[in-house]
Image (cartoon, rainbow, N blue to C red; front, side, top):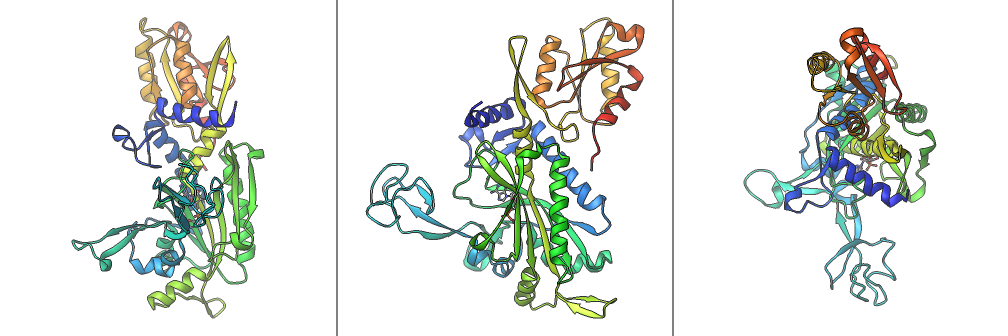
Length: 446
Ligand code: GAP
């Protein structure tokens, strides 16, 4: 399967089955903004729940936070985003398109007569590169002047830094400890694309771990290992995950060390999560800009210091896309193409499809009772329309790991057929054992 075709097929499946729709589609869509349908929202929620469970519920040393999207504008001066969160851009005076100055499709040097616009082909029409800030601006209150400018946050991390003392004091944590947050972030990306890979509105799952200076390198290594393990726990193909170390100019202004976890997408190896050793850059800057002391007093060592921060930062949308890409496959079955999303059962939006084989002989009644029982435990889907083979195929495309069919033997033998998505094998399971049978095979939620 050609790689571009795979993305096209995935986009089409996502729309057909209700994973992802283009935002404001009836108005022609909005550039690189996407909506999650019933299955997509369930998939993304499962990703976020697994992340939250592993970060917050399973650990004593991490607290949760939900900070506001709008923050004091000085936050973004302190963070360096006002001055530095920019891309160099060039405009074509002829066709009015805008590109990143390093767009590989541009021939020649922007601003020079030899430069050629990659869209309309005009020569000499590209402007000199100009810096363009990626933050979305809006106004707070009734007056739209420069004093009222606020930004939609481009990352969730800053909400954690400015609340670090509040959380520390109210939770009575001690360093080393972390704060985890999941929330929306916004970036006016110039070259968005590849479906939900790079969008202008997205969700981040970020954790900032506060440590004593000097222990940061050790914590950085620990977090690197734990984060890679987490991605493996989602069932992703191990050979498609790798580390990418940032070096030299690639290192962000705040980072002492940085590694990305990359996945091999059809469009190449790309970052899905970044792990950064941010040193004391963030707390140092907020201390300077706010004028408030953000030091930590270590009672045991009778020592005062500004903690260093190890950050883990993943995109929920990007992880959802990774799961979809990794799971998509096509097989030839009895002369027909079977499309399957082989999602790990723990992240699959629907865990079991419940089917009465036919709409008579008490089968719908038994299936409905079973459906109501099972949905107390996990997400199920009841389907009584069409041939059973078609119903299985619809669930295969939705990534549903189990199909439970109530048939003629259910009344007499009190058993149902459980069909496995990946092998298509079927086995008889006692009606009263179905719930436990599926629970046992869903995989841990952590
Ligand atoms: N606080 C650090 C930070 O924001 P980043 O590398 O810019 O670092 C972290 O972003 C993660 O957020 C990325 O690994 C990616 O998963 C996700 N992300 C960033 N920009 C995104 C975008 N435009 N669309 C979707 N996800 C994005």
